[in-house]
Each structure stands twice: as C-alpha cells, then as structure tokens.
Length: 214
Image (tube, rainbow, N blue to C red; front, side):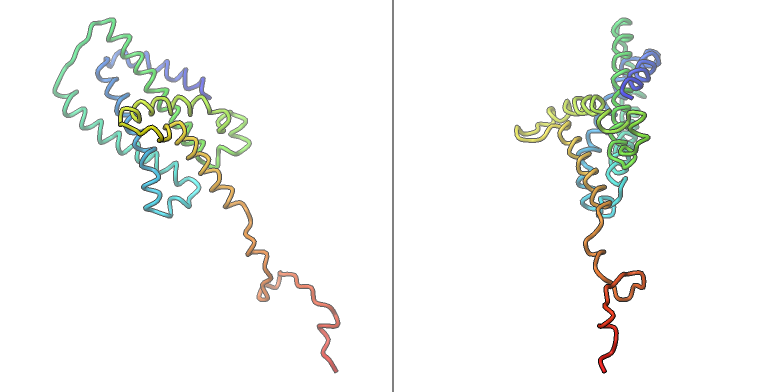
C-alpha cells in the first residue's frame, strides 16, 4: 500500500506544478503542523474524555478530527493573511521543481497519516486487511515516513534529549490501541462465577444433597 501512496503522490506532484511553489508550501506546512499537533494532543483529549479512550476507534477518530480542524483553521488564516494579500514569485525552474517536490511530499504525508489511523483501528487486524497489506506489519514504511516528517517539527519545537521521537510515539499509540482491543476480547474471570438466578448456569448438586433428610 505504500507504493500506491507513491503513485498518488506522483500524480499530485504534477497537479501541484500549476498551483505554484508558495501555495503548495503552505499546504505542506499546514498539513505537517496539523498532523503533528493531532498526534501530540490526542493523549490530552482522550484523558479528558474517558469515553473516547474506551472506544475501539476513539484514538483514531480523535487524531483525525484534531488534524482536520487544525488544518482548516491554519489554512484559512494563511490564505487570508498571505495567499490572498501577497503574490510571491520564484524563478520558473525553482517554482516547477519546488512545487512538484513539496506536492509529492504533502500527498505522501497525508497517505501515510491515513495508513497510521487505519493501523490504530480493529480493522487492521482483520484477515482482509492483511490480504491487502494495510495491517501494521505492512505499513512500517508509512509509519517511518510519517514519524520522520513530524520529527522535523518536534526537533524544531525544542524537545528535550530524553523525549521520545514522534516515530516512537506513533508506535506506542498503535501498541496501546491494540492492547486495548485485546483487553476487550479477553473474558472476565468474574463472568465465570456461579449465578443462582441464571437458569442456564450449571451447578453440580448431588442427588443426596437435593433429597430432604427424614
């Protein structure tokens, strides 16, 4: 599936040439910031709303919603302040190569982000997901690319030496989501207790115990 992302990114790179370097740079930068903040803010949001952390799709939905909302806000601000007010031109060769390169990087980033979200859902563990290579094991290249891009912002933000990289954080999020699914599938030991009010519950009663003493 990573190679499908490469093909889609290549198509978007050709389309990006018509948009220009500055416009595509704004798209790439806002997408990168939005995805980074979505990943970093997810533990805070899920911790504040316990219902989200208990949902099978809760973490993936939280990250996706955060990224989309933040991108919409940032892009509207960028369009109003920069794109709608200024016209920045570059030499033709730089404009073509730069817009194509950033368009490719932006499209591949979004594709890898979507692959990461899929890996956090129960669907990624299904046999169908494995057959079409969208399970976690098949998406290591996508996760690595996503982490490498977000680490650019993470390092620039002044992360401390002992902090996890975004690649490590992403992998831990997937591990946490899978452990949460396993806990839900694991039967509770409390359910094995005998319930006298349940007619279907078996109870070993000997014949001598059931007969009254004369």
